[in-house]
Image (cartoon, rainbow, N blue to C red; front, top):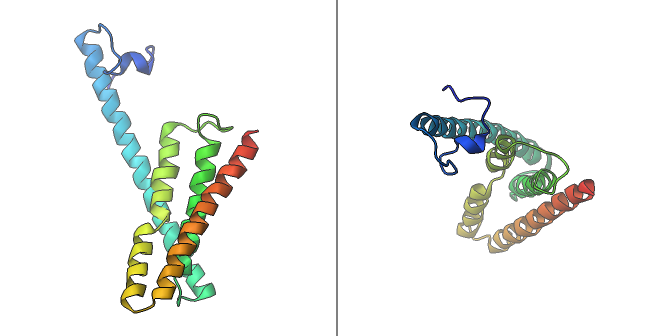
Length: 164
């Protein structure tokens, strides 16, 4: 792709292009495709790293606490919720730290998406219900919801305090 470096991206974007010749429009489409490809790559890398972190944390938590209750999933979801709340606030429009779009996608969509485990949460809760452990299933739902909400709030508050 031979996108001119002397033109701002807005002038090359097909949705905002005014009266441009055909070559500018083609370059804009190529730039948009390239940017989308880069986004997918960053999200994929973040997802892989988040999944590896989830697996390692799950093993460590289960080894330390045991696995009679899905504490690993609860703790992972709560810490992931805190991370996404903190990062989203710290790097948001009013945040203290500028992170380019691909960096935010890497952390929030990729890493946090790969790290948190709501699909596992749902399956484990169903299994508890199917095994007749209704109280444990209800405790799992309550603990997950409360701790994840608390985690995202703590992350938000911490980043908001840093933002000033």
